[in-house]
Length: 224
Length: 263
Image 1: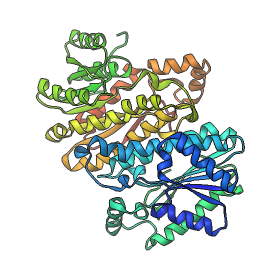
Image 2: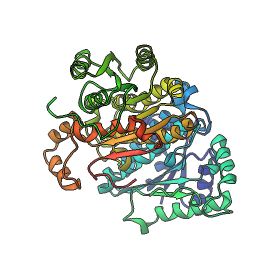
Image 3: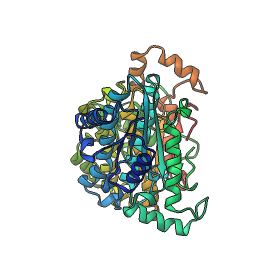
Image 4: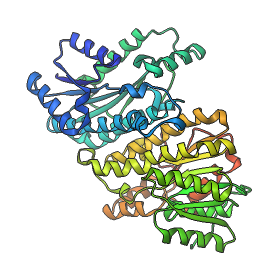
């Protein structure tokens, strides 16, 4: 199974890349710059397919660094809004559109990894939250539209602490005040759980699953 | 107007100064009529002068207070000016409602067929305008300890195979509302979403494109119909804009006849 991954520059994407590489799966990185247009994303996926073989799965773990910066909406510039909300949405659309070209005839799995910020919103991160929830709904829409092509799509929403930046710091501070449903879990444990979930969703045992959201956050949010 | 305006019992919006985008037609027009009937002073933001004059004419003929202004919500200056002009006319702002949408929002296509121009139309009208209007109205809502209401959709909750861009922006609006409810709660500002399924021109466009769609809705909506904008949807906006909803914030009030059950 050939896997393409975005976001390996960040802590979560890097951990996913390392774990899947350790499984001896063919895996290739899609650089952040390739998400700026559909044609660039398509070219990056085509290059990976040439190097590793036809693509079976795409993991989108790219979180733009701007999304992790805090700031009140009342003082946010148009440029900051674009960097924190609309640019990440465009990047995901570009990747999904390119993914369709590679998966439409042979099926496959798309997994989008996001912070939980979108589920219940987060003050000082309104633009980030909007981007996250928009992406999670893009996943649901593509799962509905492309299911007949045997393309499955899922979201994994993970504890903000894992992503770093102001978002992670605020979440860590909040965790100290409001203990999680499952206490005492380290970031390492969360990442291990995320990898177990990813491997499960990538497996043939999940042929009947699509459009799901799995929260890896020690039970802080229970989305459905 | 052919139907009576339905104001929920004892809900009073007297003295509320409201800016309502997309007030010229459909749900917005129905909301404007009901809000004014409940006593609010409604500034109707519209893209076409004739619709603004018509809705204000209907309101004033019934003894209500309203005025209109031109506002294309895809233009930041228009959004800023609409808020500033409302404050100038009314002496403040108590409720900001972003209801405007685009006729293109009901155009069906799957994600692989989405182009940049169409995305720009949808995201600028729905999500970016919500940001601009929220940012511009914040200091005034802080002063009045007022309310921001944004319109979302069942598509933004469940996803939509042939409206993926619309669904994404409406989901973004829900997250924006939840975040701002937390961010602005200390200022006494309520922030909520209304997710309606009202029989608007957008819905009629969908019916036209797929004649089985109306029958599909009748079968899949527990209440068996799409809501009437005036009698089913507008009263809920009156409630959200009123003091009766003062302890509700960060919520999506779903008015779809039971069609959308998962939250």
